[in-house]
Every structure is written in C-alpha cells, then in structure tokens.
Length: 448
Ligand SMILES: *Cc1c(COP(=O)(O)O)cnc(C)c1O
Image 1: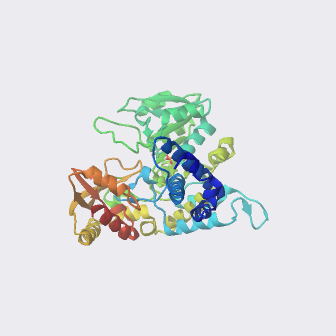
Image 2: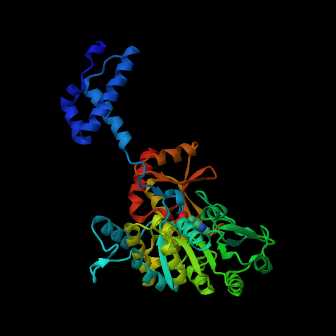
Image 3: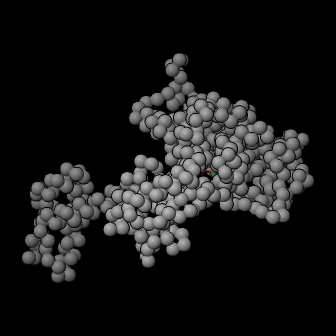
C-alpha cells in the first residue's frame, strides 16, 4: 500500500459511509472533515503506519466532527448545594417562566408594539406595572444585567460629577465587577469617605458638595465585615442626601423580594426595604434571589428612571424579549404570593433538613453505596455570605476522591459535587426532583 492508494475525497464521499456522513453533517462539513482525515492519514503513512480501510477514514472524520460540533454549554446536575451557583448558571427558572420564554422565542410578540393603537409600543412597558406592584417603587426599568444597571445609572446621572461612597463598600463581585472601575467607566468621579471598617455620618456630610451627583450604597454581598465597624444606614444616607439635595442609589445585588430571616438565614436586605427607606434608585439582578432570567432591574423615582431610559447607553444594554417574558412570569409568582412554592430558588431555600435527609437516604438505598452526613448548603450568587442551611448529603468515600469527582463531571449528564474532608458530597437541595433518576444512573455507571 502506498500513498497513491489513499482514496480520493470524492471516492470517500460517494461510499455508503460517506453518504451517511453527508446526511448527518451536510456536504461542506463532510468534505472539510474528510480532507483533514486524509491529510492526517498521509502524514501517518509517511511515518510508516498502514493505510486504514475507507470506512475507518470516514469514521475518523465523523469522530472529529462530533467533537468539533458538540455544544460546550450543556446541562449539568448541580449537587454542590450552592443554590445560586454563578458558574453553573445561577437561578433555575419556574415552570411558568420557562413556558413564557419558550412562547416569546417561538413566535412574534408585542415586544415593541401597541395592539390597541396598531403602533409602535415600548419594550419597557411590559415589566413596569408588575415591578411597581411587587417593590412599591414609582417606576422601573429592566436592562441586560445588574452590572449594566449600575453602569447605566452612574453614567446617566453622575457623568463628570462626583459619587460619594463609603470605603467599606468599594466592593468586587466575581467576574470583574468592581465599583471603582465601574465608576471610572461611567465617567463619574469617585469620592471615597471613611475608612475600611468605619464610616460616620460626618464623613458623608463633609463630602457632599456642589459637584456631588449621587450618594452610592453598594451591598457587601459576598463578604462580611465584623468587629469594630460602622457605616450609616440607608435611612441615614437618605436623610443626609435629602438635606443636600442628592439622590441615594442603592446597588443591592441579589435583590431579595422575600425576607430570608423566615428561612433560618440571616437577613438579606430586601428591595422593598430600600424603596421604603427612600433610596431614589435601587438596582438588582434578575437571576440571583429574584430567581428569574439574567436581567438588571432598576426601580425608583420616575424622573430618574426616565433619565436612564433616555440615555444612549440604555439601548446598548437593553434586555432581550425572552428574558423579559421570563422575568414577567417570575415576578407574577411574587405578586400572587406563591413565590416560595413556584420559584425554584425559594423552594430550595425552604427545603427542610428532614426532607433532604429522606432524599439522600433514598439515593443511598438505591445505590447500596455511600453514607449520609449532615452538611451545609449555601445560597451563593453574592448573597448571604457566611450563611448556611442545614442539609443531609450522600457522602462517597474513595481513595481517589478527586478522580471520582472528575469521572462524575464527565458523566452524561455531568454531575458536579463537592469534595469535603476527603469525601465526595452530593447535596440533594440543588438536585431537581426530576433529575434523581439521571443522577443515580450516572453514579451507577461511574461507581461500577
Ligand atoms: C451580583 C452583583 C452585581 C452584578 O450583577 P450581575 O447581574 O451579575 O451583573 C452588582 N452589584 C452587586 C452588589 C452584586 O451583588
């Protein structure tokens, strides 16, 4: 067999296997993959390797195409017990939200159309009534995410002017969101007051002047400052702001609409509290504790919301129709008072340790492997730092626990657990009930 015996691309394409390859991937991709495979084989033959049979060449091309075209964004089973796992996509959406998003994706909609007048309508109008109802604010605007909401707010209201903020609130959220950098990007000038651990009313008062556009509070969503610390409350900031004619903007981050205290957690400030305290604008995420799709929500004074809406940046950070539809369905759960039952994030927060124990016991019984251990789940997603919820996890012992964790990550569907104390823990809190069977199957395959 010599290089001259290598089949031609046309020959391969017209073989039975080649026809199947074309049927699966289309002509262009099939030709590209076969060329690569033939080139690779030619190089291998020069190294003395034998000529493979034609169907094997086609099979090589097919393997390559499958790897190239596989979606890298794929569903996983989250057994980490971190409810708002940013790396795993934050909030799981309610059934109503999923249906609404599918409907918005599958057809035309009134996104920017007024049916009664047969004219152009406003994308912003769909969410405002519900957001007013749920948060008690006067007006609302929805953009792409909370980072965009904060950037838009600072740009539209404070460009070339000053923004006063406590040094303890110059926060960094994961993924490159840092308050000083967002401020710099907005063109506003940062005026930091107080010290890392203590900021007093007087510090803020002294900084307020002619050039002050805003007083900013940023929720320290992913860390806790303990010990000899103080910072003026939002109410105090609003008082100081009113005296100086300066609006207070509250970057709340997680945006709880329900009180986490009633679930045995610490208190996460709610949107309603910020509105009531008199914040002129409150910005928060759609996919953290709201439990909806990715979005940035700003609620507050109508005159300020109007300024944000009219700013050119608003067009660049607008929310997409699918997200708007999902957010609407999610907010309806709050308006109807059914969020704890219907919004998966709250359902997971509300699960009792007894229920979780029964589920983990069920897994252990089905598998005949593993032990039950008391563990802690976390809310995550930049909310309630240091706060945990009691849970029961299935613990798998192995001499090679990181290899076991890696094998489970490679399973179909992939399972992500948590390695703790030399064991692999699987926390039922974040595993959706309908995923139990798939989880057990993946475990059986990996453990056998
Ligand atoms: C999470 C968070 C943000 C960023 O929100 P995204 O929706 O991820 O863009 C901004 N500020 C605070 C305080 C946050 O917690």
